[in-house]
Image 1 (cartoon, one colour):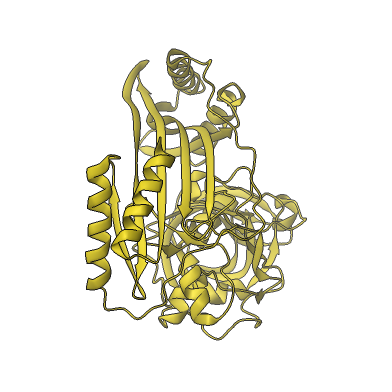
Image 2 (cartoon, helix red, strand yellow):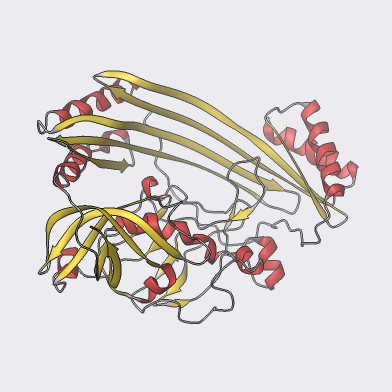
Length: 447
């Protein structure tokens, strides 16, 4: 039905004078539930989506969108895009993809239709019960959620592009609160699986409770400049704040610190960062970007050398290169921007314990706080509250909190002298994955 409707839309657009046209359709079905004291606390079952239309006329691109699919919607889309095109003053190139390229369509997991909602609720109730029974110092869960989403994306245009993809994601997490005397700490446990039956309740419970309990008694240390190891999750969240510097659009606008640095060294030889749209565990894994360009795995930084910027069709045309398949829309209503798919700081081949073994006195950071407020995303300067553990004579010792780590992101990249083999990627780290990394020296401010 939607195919026939789209054909009518393209015919109406052609009659209006559009030279080329495109539709971007998406729909998402999702379930999100949480529990509290053995009862359902929040429950949301939703289906949402819509379609955007864009067309080229007289060298301008007009946009419009709808959630309705009738004849009135066709007239509205075409007329709105027509008016929008003639209101645009920008002289940037406008492009639609012709469908050429090597598309790597993947087998994504699907939501278990044979598993009832009651079973999913019971899983979360059992998770809460297991966590609370672990230790008397575990007093409550501050947050928890079971999430499953099925997402469909379809892009078709009049230049020959016609690609469609459906994928699903299933994960659950719990954030626990531990208390001893007046000291309160939190910990988070997470698991993501191909099916509901593969989710590990025990893994979530153990990770969350171990993290919270191990931080009890944490205190600040004296200010020091010392080697620092960022745990994988912490460094992934940190790295995610600087992805705009790899965007060709930011480079062209003179807003990136990496202008003119292609094929130059920007980091130590231990640093390899890839954009991997085909990683099975990635929420942003896809065979094609939001302009329909085939995606591919690419090194952005390889052994410290900047190999590419990330492009969509417009920035690629400006730089006279090919798109890297990184066009991105936050929703069908949004304009096309640039973003990595799954940004991956690639692992090394050393165990985490071995990575710390040569450190006489240092800090192991497990969580960073105030990422948005404590970072200058343009200059790379950062000053962030954090917590973790002291490293004494190569091993973890006492927990530490109420400290601040500061430095500059671009200098930090050059000071990475070892990378562990414990790569981690999850929705909790904003679609950025990393292994744990060791920094030669950073400033730690404490008591």
